[in-house]
Image (cartoon, rainbow, N blue to C red; front, top):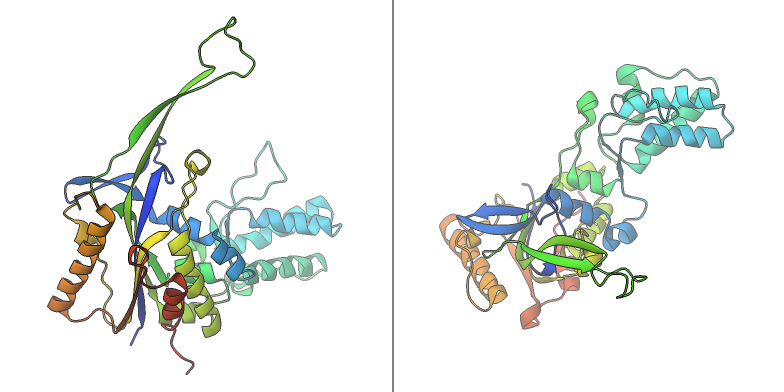
Length: 358
């Protein structure tokens, strides 16, 4: 049976704008007929991948999402004194392993760029460069599906690719199902963005010149208690990592630490938002996963929004367990306000979800 690790977090954000919409305002959602502030799943996963727990804890085991792998191969060959025309030709052919190439840019004719972002593991990057070097030495490049088979892998040591998956439309055999699902975070209570009208002064102006501001602007922000849900298919994570259980454990450790501490960084210099999860519930079991967003379908109210959110979350978990049976065989909770549990405790507990060797 499949083992799932489910993570439920409540995090208090100060006035901030970490994830903006197309108008530069905090993203929003309506839930239960009530406006909420929202952090998109995409922005959260980006923050996780670039967090310290990932960058330091998983150094050497992280992929790159890019359209420019062909350009990197070209620059690598040119650094090896390969003539520019030959480096461009070979790099362009090898880059097709990751997808179609965009038309040559007339303003930057040396640039090699794909049409879509490809999530590339360190191993695949190395295979692509090795293949290009062999082509420089005179070896014939494989074509079509053979090229993809030479470079791409269905499982390797890229933890973020294993966690968040990828789709390669041109080489679907090498797409990967995500082992980690991350929901959009929403406020547990009614929340809408506010507007900040501001002015900036010109340091070299004097009152005799002009007493007014040098710039006028408007900036939106919001605040609140956000609920975030994430679910890890531990067996799939191990499979995506080529059965490397130790690496899977390191990945889960980094994931838990990052979920509790990382945040999208929009307008961070203006707001200095660096929140930490105030409540983290980790659950391990083989039952079908279930999120607890329904706890907040009716927006939380009152003077203690965090306390009320914790109460609503735990109440919903108990109600679902009563109706459907326990969703977890084991669980651990960190509640900062009550001094219960630590992040170290939760990380150690979560790591135990990875199946033993066998």
